[in-house]
Length: 79
Image (cartoon, rainbow, N blue to C red; front, side, top):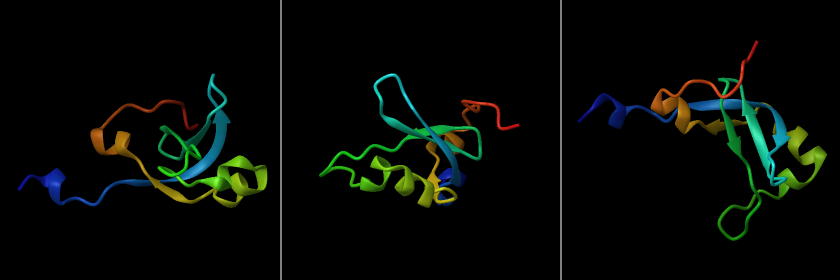
């Protein structure tokens, strides 16, 4: 079994949000990666993303970061 197969998925805290060109919400993660956080029932139930208070309540929540697991460079500068 390879090392990557036995490792826990990397999780990173949400540090902020922005919208993309299609007005979909994107979470900015502490690692410098970003990830869409769509509310798209029944596949993804993220009604919290639809309101400012909902998004604010999830700041610090840790999402799995596949880009970290893949060793991808950051999407933005964290400094």
